[in-house]
Amino acid sequence: MKKLLLYILLLSTGTVLALEDISLNVVIPEKVSVGENFTIDVYVKLKRNISGFECSIDTPIYGSEYIRFIDVRENLELKERAGNFYMLNLENDSVFISFALLDKPLGSDFHLFTVKGEALKEGNLTVRVTVVASDEEGNAIRLPPLTYKLEIVGGNQDKKEKEENIFSWIIEIISSLLRRIFGG
Image (cartoon, rainbow, N blue to C red; front, side):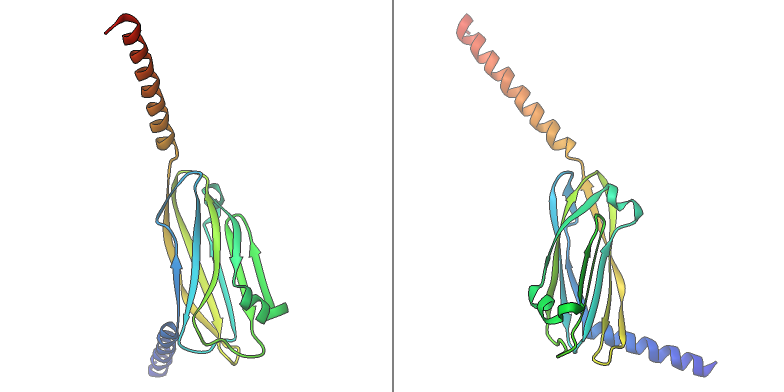
């Protein structure tokens, strides 16, 4: 039993060190309007060398009802360095990127990618980011998944306000015209 506890302690210590050595900075809006385009930027901060990296951004199964990912701007320098060992997969409700560097490991902070999305439907959505890096020997370094809440507010409110403003403007023009005609 003591050996098992010691083993668990060593694993958790290694995980903590890995978390201090590799971290993500995900820039995602908290709120967008229906019909609005938005971006999600993923930056990686390193305090150690890595030879590979996998990152996915996805939503729950029903996520494609609320948002659609429409474009990804990749880190072209990483893509070129990884060559055939670079993969990007863009779906309506998920993005997956993976690369392996066989020549020289990566040891400095970098921008991984920017995802452009479109808000389709009003509601609340969870966006999950999962990451697995690999050290110079190819050992997996798993980071805990990150979750972000995205609130999509209805574009109907803005549309209603615009309609009310147009209606008020028309009434004002008619009133002004009637005052001129009837002298008031």
